[in-house]
Length: 358
Image (tube, rainbow, N blue to C red; front, side, top):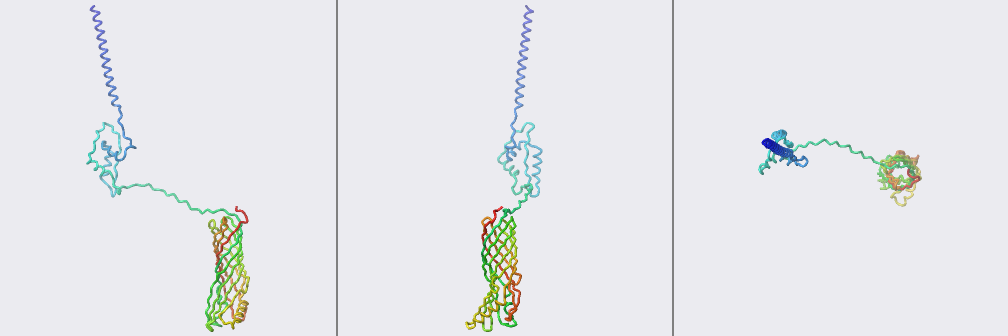
């Protein structure tokens, strides 16, 4: 019996020790797990995108880093007319965070006064902008390859020069005054155009006048005489055109004036009717002696020519470098002299196509 009791007591003590050991291990394990969970709880980190510069400055008061201290040293030593804005960079705290210190209302304005820069002192470095070259403006024009014919009409101004030298001689009748004046002249004609892109050729034949008036006042007898030179001419011409834009052009050419009335002179005076025969005789002498002839005229022109609506308009100048009037041998005191002509015409016309535009 004593052996049996001792054995049972030993078993009980072993069981009790095992149970106590198990309980101690469970308690230690629970403590260990609780401590581990507490250490692994993550602290929320502020995201850089959500924080504003002012929030960054406020949060930065809790941590002190070498970067921020250097920046504050730069603020204390400003350069000429420049202020360096110190912006500290948030760095995660490696050790236990210092408890956040609330700013008092008095401290906050001071910090803002130090950190916020004045707008006038801010130096902004701007990157150099490369300006791209502007595209050149190119005047586009339509492509033409067409032949047209048309009619035109207008008005002009004509001058025949040095007429007084033809009529009077100071050695014979020294006491007189002379006055020369041009005249307005009409113009009408037909023409044909051939155009290929910017180049064009014009063939034309115009009817117009070459005209001027000579007035003479003779002191002896107080006589006023008037001589009108008016030659009706047909002027064939050829000209080349250069279209500067779609419808505007410049042209050069040559024309030849062919007079239809070689003796186109009218004479009149303020003499009384009993001397009317004198005026008629003088007119016959003038027409017999002073005769018009073929006259070559170089031409310059600018104009508008639309192949879309057919409208034509041009301003043309012609200069007769040859003598228009030839003086025949005569006993009346008329002389040979240089007499060039000038002709300025403004015409408007209309054209129709002979071929389709290509």
